[in-house]
Image (tube, rainbow, N blue to C red):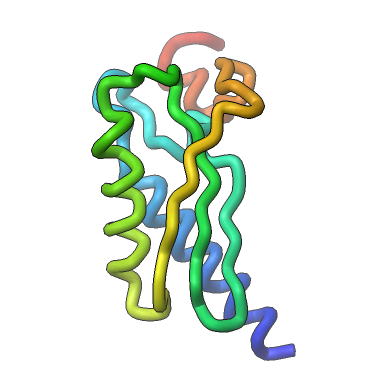
Length: 107
């Protein structure tokens, strides 16, 4: 039971880290933008993040996933982190949180 609580707590810390990473072209963090599809944490504290980019030829396609990986790995509780990029389903503005839409004047 305590393992589940630890992975849930770690998941929350990971989300907090993700909220510090911004798409350089949009003044909203990648989590609120809806670029993070899933965060998996196993009992060994290995993390896998499934994310997308706003477009396949996004200017930060090379650097953004590395930044995500490095920042998540910087958490003491994380043993290893891997970022997988997917374009299925493709990102749309519908994936943005209400907070992101408000920030961008879309509400």
